[in-house]
Image (tube, rainbow, N blue to C red; front, side, top):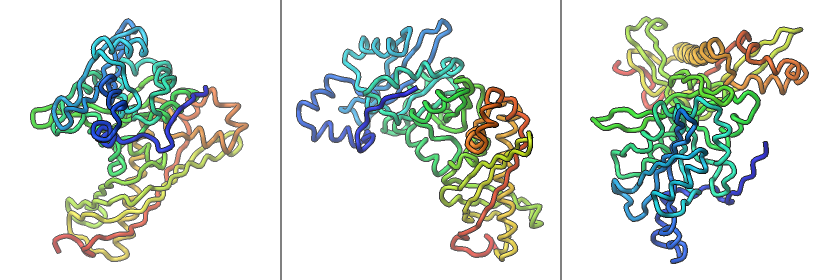
Length: 387
């Protein structure tokens, strides 16, 4: 399927900058457009039992920036996404302005169906940019869009920044609309997206992005927790930062010892299939640079100790990958690791003969994990904490 896109040379303009320009600097004609149209910033999609689409949308009010009324929320229903979107005009009384959507939230009632048809409206609308984030919610998407933020910032910006900052955490994937399209329209409809849920903080419900929703044939089949999600991201080469906690008590004879290792930049990953006769196997290799950010316990930093830390860190990375494999391979038979792409590239003849049965092949595929770690930074203290 070919999807045409119309996009600017500079990409998506940050919403904060847009609002400032729109309100203060733009000519009267452009300012008038903002007064005559409602700027969509956050979208939630749910689906009723009879197939009716319920769209909930947060609209930016430029005149109320920094207040609770900065994001006004409306919902409408229709037989299709397009009809629901058009019916929103009945509530807002203005035409909708689409280019500045930050996040699209898909609720579980919609995610239990094939999501490819649901994306069609977003792909055909030439006002919608290809780069809003796609996230799947644990509860109704409408509930997330209606949350009130604790700080005077748009909820859509809070969620967007939570996903952006996964580069410092690696506990959830960063999947944009165009990337989600590639997964949903690929054979098998296997893919993933970040999970969003509402959590209680100081008596108020706030959004939290963590974990990974896994899809097969375009439908959500389950969720991976934060560690399992990072297990998939290791293999995808998408871990760019975060903290790797490594227990050290058994290996150094210390009680309750732990290390906090900071991931220094993007970790390299490769998936290497091997075909011997009719027997296929695969190896996931990870190469990562780490820095010691914290030591809980007494631990001298000599070369032998550092070599042991590198070995323990490598084992921890391999453990996270295997944890994700236990669920995705053993339970779901769903190749979110992208091993199929490596097989297709290296062994096209084998792939063409077996692609229809890949789910069963993947479920019993021998997969080895090999992580290589190098400690490059010790911090300001070259020995252990405390002593």
